[in-house]
Image (cartoon, rainbow over all chains, first blue to last red; front, side, top):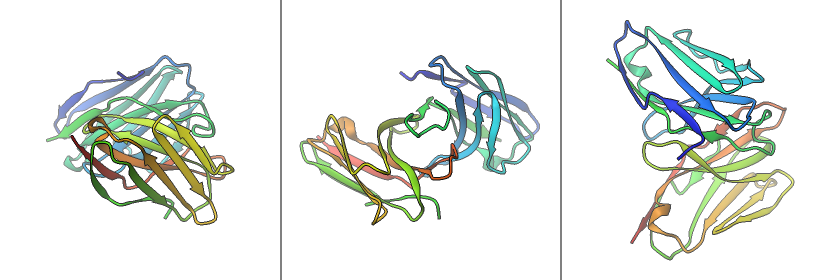
Length: 115
Length: 112
């Protein structure tokens, strides 16, 4: 079991749909991350929030919109996605400056399929 | 490239044997981390080694770091079937960024 909870576990959506991925942690971490992982590839960083402020956006298309309502929650709003956006979306959390002394804690991901 | 690269890309061994995987990189790092991923699930942190450290141990894991050669190795001793997974090295780059960059990964299969 992981201390980072992601919902839903699976999501199938059409290209005209709007959906949201949710992530929650209760470890007191103040940095939260979204990664995208395609099959047999490494995770690719999308966004980082530090103290509820967006600190890194890896030039992600605007059809992906992150939101950090509070220090425990992280959302990823999806709109007008393309089939190539199908992937495993991973949420992670850590202490800020994540990695200096604090590893990332990952959820089990949301498997997204865009039809 | 800021990405680490694991070698070998795949390794198949028998239970009880040791498994060694290497990670090479080209940039300056703050620390290097190793993660494991079971099929279709999230990543699990295994061990972190800072740039001023040379070796760390955690249970059956031993990691070394040679910053002059820009390489790290992860040794798993007395492997078990449950160690079957993908393993990634991840680099925290120098400069204060929170960006953790994952290597391409390697697949370890431990046969019972």
